[in-house]
Image: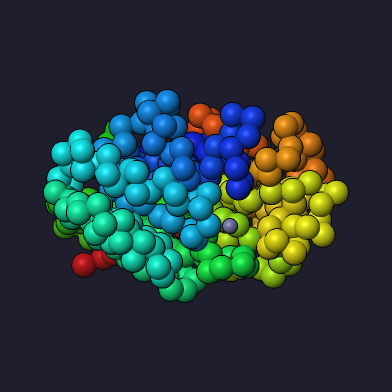
Length: 319
Ligand SMILES: [Zn+2]
């Protein structure tokens, strides 16, 4: 199942060196979720040939302009293109009012339904379908700011059709897929572990928006397959990172390390830096498996390993 992150914007406060404001596209089994929507997001969606009419859910981490100023443009573009599908927007208090005011003073009425969901705290469930759930994290920033945890659900066991007996009922097949043993009409116990292949462990992608670094462990982040963490500054500006409620690349690496992540993605680079390679070098001081957010690149949220199955044993019940 597809689970990947496409980088649309990788820079902080202002455009620089062909880098744009923060935005990412998360693809979970062909459902597209837009995460933050900086000013040039529409242009980036076009540049990377994303069919953005398929985006039905947009998540805004906070109301600093480099994270949401592209949103109203996208809302109007959808209107011009004749969108009819519902659009769900998730963001902190105030964003609803900003959107409503812009629509009001341009005397615009949308042809599609825009559903606003206010984020008020960390660990808030925002979205859920059969593949995935999305919850919030509280960031340590100058204004209310939230991260997002994209967490896959445990998938069903796959039936091994080559060795599967023919006499099972539909219900028994469902039980096997759910990881339950079944008893046939002769009283024989069939172990799901003999007849199925285990699914991969559910994957987790954690998006940490603007934040000051903290040594505290966030339970819902532990063991993430991929963490995105902002890295606005290099170590030389650690004091400034602290006072502006941002992080350095090395701090991003430490965050990934203390949370036992599998991979780290860093971005939100300050416009004062032309070359982003030093960010990689500094993050790797703490966490080796780090990659830079590069616009247009897609990073797969890699699986770890199949989940463990019970010890195999065979039993026959005498009736
Ligand atoms: Zn910010």
